[in-house]
Image (cartoon, rainbow, N blue to C red; front, side, top):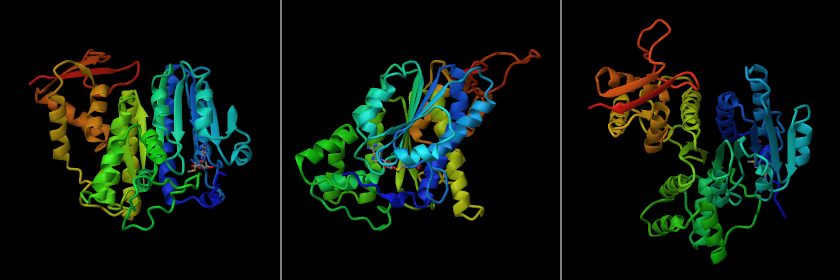
Length: 403
Ligand SMILES: C[S@@+](CC[C@H](N)C(=O)[O-])C[C@H]1O[C@@H](n2cnc3c(N)ncnc32)[C@H](O)[C@@H]1O
């Protein structure tokens, strides 16, 4: 029997607002950009919910559909094609009601894991975006994510809500340990559609290996059991190693801990997967702007002395510049600007906006540390180009370390 957890949709909670803002603010520039590929877009919300909350606030389906409508009315591209699918185990009827009036909407009643491969079979050469927002972790089979990465799509991106504390709690159950955390609210929104809890059996261990894509999590739980790390450190280590595992299939993996108050423990992690540097950079800027906006809300608009990144670390401009210099001094061959910046964020995480890196690179070029090739090399008036930004089909930049 599946558990519906209707309470989730009674009113939209701050956690859901942050999640949906991250999706919404990324999705618009993503759609605008992807339409330039002249290939159709297949958008699938794999755990769609009701479409909207009972308090009238939009859920992820309405947010995506409204943005798609906006992009379709403003794009200059001829005959853009976007197909949307919404899967939900419990709320297909609500979805049908709430999404009336939108065109080309496909609603699937059932489990994501049972339908997704069939749904993607017709997506050869399309751009595919999957939004994965389950209650818990049990439906997240890593082998499915691996298989999407090698399918013959034009591109594939995933935004996954990872309930990493939920994983740690189940991992402790599976290895016969009790998880102890000092924040009692942490599990408030952690609801599994399947009410059975994992028990200490070989089957539970196998299920978790399937979800994590390996058995690396067992060493983390053993360290927790031995008292070498606490529950929060266990979660952080798991999230880091899970991302490393996903990077076997996806070139760019970003990890954003979702916390609402500065200094608070993360509640979920949003993980973004793509094989395209431009998608990674778009998400980095989105993560940084979302984080800034939430900091403003929490500080009541007050000025804060130190800027902090999504991991609550103070961000020091000099430190960023040192990291930029260190990263770029490895480039002895010309490499595209976007590729090199995406590699930077893979190494250090989304610690600043792409503009901060580009500004630092302009300075390094000025000091003679970087050699830069630009296409077009000269402006319309015959002067040497100075841009430090790539634009699809318009501007290219590649650079290498000079000394
Ligand atoms: C966190 S809610 C999604 C909320 C939605 N993204 C929103 O913003 O409104 C998770 C949804 O997944 C559905 N669900 C649970 N197990 C599922 C499965 N295996 N496949 C598809 N949907 C599932 C639940 O009915 C629930 O509506």
